Amino acid sequence: MAFERITIDPAKMGGVPCIRGLRIPVATVVDMVAAGMTTEEILADFPDLDREDIAEALRYASAALRERQLPQVSGQ
Image: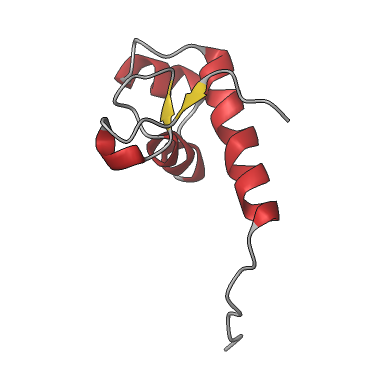
């Protein structure tokens, strides 16, 4: 799967995956969604983003999780 809106540049943000070369990390967008923010709220906080940026950030995060072995979490 290609991610046209996700960029990784070692010279920007220490190589953290960002949206379209902007200094907006994918993790920041995913965290905002996880916190319950709506698309409209995220776009208001980051006017340089558009809806497709948010959707692609979520697809990228999902793909990244599928690629890695996750640590076991003990259920208490």
